[in-house]
Image 1 (tube, protein in one colour):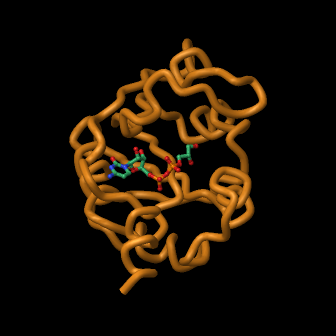
Image 2 (image 1 turned 90 degrees about the horizontal axis):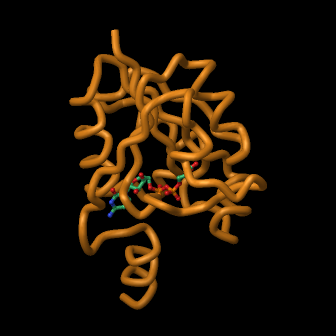
Length: 139
Ligand code: C2G
């Protein structure tokens, strides 16, 4: 059984989120999703998510392509999470390709070398939570 892991805030859930989750699932048998806590989102995006962690968790775990959801408390714990869930592949949108993050300031490839494979999938164009907030706020 191949375990796929991915992470995100998944705020104002939209088709870009759905696309990456459904495509990630095709790489294995179990899709495990780390959802950023409200606190982590504030440190990542300098704003409170629109939907609380509980609401975002409820939406993501309702998807038939998702097998397990957990709370991502810190960007620094990625290695711990990947080992805990015995991840074979980390899959992220390609906005993360080459991006350095966390206190180690490492890319996922550097951070997870020897832990699990890392694959980046093309982001869904022209949709993001930030754009949705901007569009809705001017209606
Ligand atoms: N995504 C996508 N296409 C979009 C928007 C998002 O493929 N139009 C992908 C992102 O690349 C990411 C996932 O959907 O893989 C979740 O996106 P966000 O909720 O914005 O999460 P992010 O802020 O990237 O948090 O530890 C990693 C972080 O928790 C990831």
